Every structure is written in C-alpha cells, then in structure tokens.
Image 1: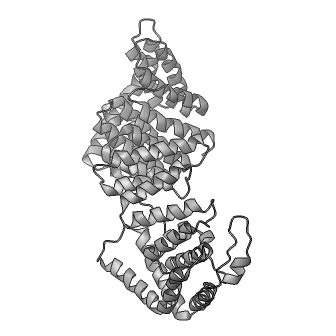
Image 2 (image 1 turned 90 degrees about the vertical axis):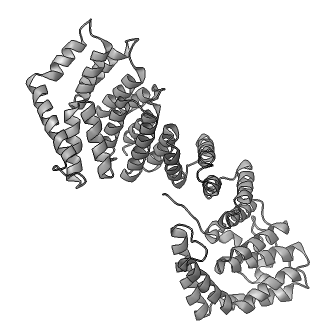
Length: 467
C-alpha cells in the first residue's frame, strides 16, 4: 500500500514561526506580515517568555532530546500510523515527555501569554509563540491552540490564512477527527487553495474513515481535483496518483485504474510506476471479464515499458500469448523472465509453453505463415477477421510496417472491431516510432479497450518527449 504523510511543522513552513525578540518583531514592516505593537501590559510577559525560550533552545540537553524526538518522529511518519499503546508509540511519547519536562518553565511562560494578552497584537504574538513551541515539541494540541489564537487575532496575513487553516485540518486528520478535517479541506479547496497535496488529504479522509465503504468517494475527489488542476495548468501530485491507483485496485475499476496509472506514469515514467499501472489494470480488466485480445495488448504494453515486476507478471504474459497462439512473443516473455531471474525454464508451465512455441514457430517459418497470411488478407474476398489476424501475426513477428498496412485495410471495413483495430494500429505506429500518429489512433478507442488505450497513449507521449 502506498502511503504519504507530512509533518505538521513542515507544512506550516518558516513563515508561521516568530523567532526574533518582541521588539524587533514590533518594528518589522514586511509587506506580507502585519506590524505587531504589543500592549504595554503584555510587553514584559512577552519579553520574558521570548528570552527564556531563546535560551532554552540552546541548552545541550534540550538539543539532544529534540534530536532524539525528531528521529522517532520521522520513523513514526515514514511508516503506517502508530497504534496507541504500541511500543513504538510509547517510546515516542516517553521521549516527548522528557523534552517537555526540560521545558516546563518555558512552556508555562508561553502558555501564560494567552491569558496576559489584551489586544489582537498580543494574541497574534502569543499564538505564534505557541505554534513555535508546539512545533518544536511535536505537540498537536499546542499547535492547534496557537493557530486558532493567531487566526482569532485577525492579523494573520491573507496569503498565510489558508496555510494556517490547512494545518488545522491536518491536525484534525491526525487526531482522526475526519469529518472536521474534511470540512476544512473542502472549504479551502473551494476557495482555490491547492497546496501541500490537500486533495490527497481530503481523499484520505474518505479512505481512512471506512476503507470498504468510501473508496469510490475518495477516488472521485482525486479525479475531480486532478482534472481541475490540469485545466488550470497546475502540476498533479505523484503521491496522490499512486494512492489513487492503489485504491482503484480495491474496487477493480479499470477506468479509474487506467486514469491514475496513466497519470503516475506521465509524471514519472519509470519501471516502478509502469509495473504498478499495468498490474492494477490487468487485475481490474480480469475482474470485469475483458476480451482476450485486450489482455494480449496489455501484455505488449508491459513488454515495451519493462512493466514486468514479479514472476506472476511474466507467467500471465506466457498464458496470454499461448492462448492467442503468438509463439514469438511468448518466447520473448520467457527469455526476459528467465534473464530477470523470475522465471525458471524448468517450471512445468514455462517448459510446456516454450515447447509449444518453438514447434509453432518452426511450423510458421516452414510454411511461410506470415507471407501466406498477408497474401490472403489482401484478397478482395478476404474476411475482416482474416485481415486482423494477419495484422496481429505481422505485429507479433516484428513487422509493424506490414501490420500497419493490414490494419489500415481492416479500418475501412464496416464490420471491423474498431477498438481492436485502432489499438493494434496504434501499437504498430508506436513500434515504427511515429508516436504522434499512435496517440491519435489510441484516442479513437472508446469501448472496453479505452482504459488500456489511455496507458498506451501516455507511453507514446512520453516516448515522443524522449522519456
């Protein structure tokens, strides 16, 4: 399962933390930040708390505990969420308690600022001090109080308010208050805030709340906001696309699987992303009872993208090529699988398939099968199925030029399977290096082969860009 978590402190950013003395902050006049003028009553408390905090952070024992806590925090967020009461969670909380114990006086002084504040300037300063202390000690409760206090002051700069509210949404999410988090994220996105992978977090609020019930709702979120981002010329989140692909696997929806798989491969066209896209689409198509020829063309895509990841991927291709009577491609799948160390030539299934493929290949060569199929396909009386079969044979034997000619002939036939012909025509054009034409052919596929055609089109587009 693909996971993606971001620390609260990291998402807040340096703009949310005040690290200077109160006097310097009061005189600051940055365009995006308000000029803070603490009240006379509040100023002594602010000076004392800020000075004590600045000194406390320099103490060696504080820095040591902070470093240890950060290591545990990174471990905590890199893996699955820790279960309350687990040994890992206990170690994290114990280390945080140690750090808070060293800073008890400073914490009391900073928390006292809230009750000492008499003006909005005071509240804004106090809120930011609490945010800084909460981020330093990894305390979501303090972070929430600081964020709310700063926002309540009315002095948070307009361009910073969405980030404050996003952080509050993240805290709700981390605290499993998913409904509250969802409301915040929707409001922010409705106002045009799309930073920090917010669509991912909104979708996750559905995935996490009830994995069996709300997967589709979460996928709708990722799909809608991804399309909106593309329309606005914004980059999509690779993590969100990978998450969408992983969730699509749960409901075996080929259209959604192809969408998220294609976008992940478009953003980062490496073997890992292609393998995941191919595997999830294959499982979805099988669950939907896809046509055997579609599965053949999916195996061809896997071959051209190095999208074989596990032994079962190679075995599936062997099965598909055997069923379609395509010996050349079957032997190619076995060869790459054994070279990768994922297939064994002595495996009964592999051995039997190889034996058949070699025998069939010898027969085809002895009878000039490709030449005869080409000749029969060009007869005026040739059936459409004969033409398509000849094109498939040409494609299988590494003759994309001949395959393209034959599929062009089939394309003009009213009884042709348009989706199959356009897909195969696109593959032939892809193999010929005519990637723009291939994309146009794949775009004409509208039926059950459309999910696969989407992946092929992305691969052709990547190759056109030299990727």
